Image (cartoon, rainbow, N blue to C red; front, side, top):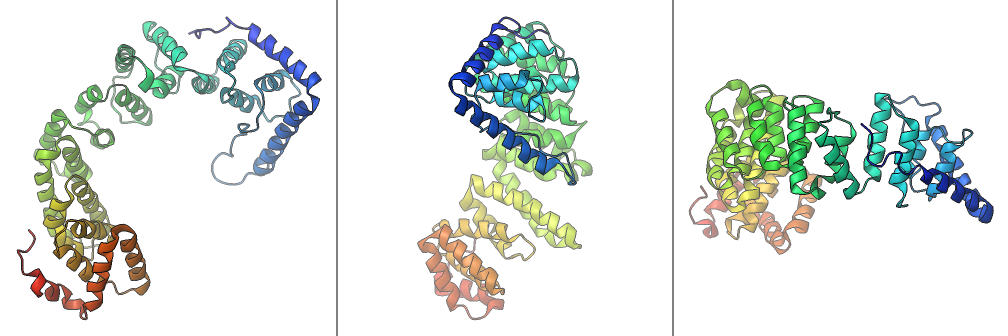
Length: 415
């Protein structure tokens, strides 16, 4: 459909051409400087891409940052003998130019170009979105929604809505959301679907959470990942996650079991914390059942994600419910360290004792030195206490026994 303002200000091109002519005449040195910077950028790009043998497409020519005036860029765009490798780079520099006339200029050029090919449409959608301001974007979106425009995933409607979602008036956000849902009735199972649903969540997070739930049976992984990415308190999402877990489907458990627990934590942290902590303990207790190294490594990463989420909500409770697992050699070092850090900062005297015991068990001197430096950066004065206690331990094999039997440790064992 025609763009708002397209063809209404074609005089802008003549104005800029006249301005370019004046610059060339009255400021020849400045004009020549722009020409030289442009030629140098083109030459460097040709040097990089002329004999391109690496995987993937070579980088596009980028003229941003060269301090080229809008009048100069339009002049070069309209000169057939332009020294550039192609006009898209000039258009990109116009879209990024600080001159307030850039949107009018691009609209006039777009009308003249009369883009028909899909690649051209995508290019112009990107350029116009970059050059747009919130007012023009809102007006253009209103027109497109009112016309019930056919959805193009990389088109102007989606790009404008994505860039200006936070700036749009609430009624317009709602209208754009409804338009997208009417045009895209599928879930987030494809690359295009993920982009559409990302935009839907940015337009109305609560409504998108409710709408995406029905697509879980068709695409468990994408739905749960999307909900976790845009996580927040939601009784509806927490209830759905619990129902999916309670189904007992081994495929769901193996594919998104951990992600569902993370979703419960984010959606219902108060009630969900204890049930997810119990889940973490159960997985940690069964950690030894993973017989192969690859399986243990995967299991370690999965458990670690749950542990970090529990620590983020209630560090003290997580530390003292899971503290024993900091000494499980199969657990990732970063996750062991995170548990110990929470224990040390809890104020309980057993925290530094446990951290000292863990540190004493590190046999590699280089790794131990690195960890000690990290402790000093992260824990401040508490690190000194840990390092001192570690220096007093002589038998790494039974250091926990020595520490927990010490007079200082005659308190209840952490649960």
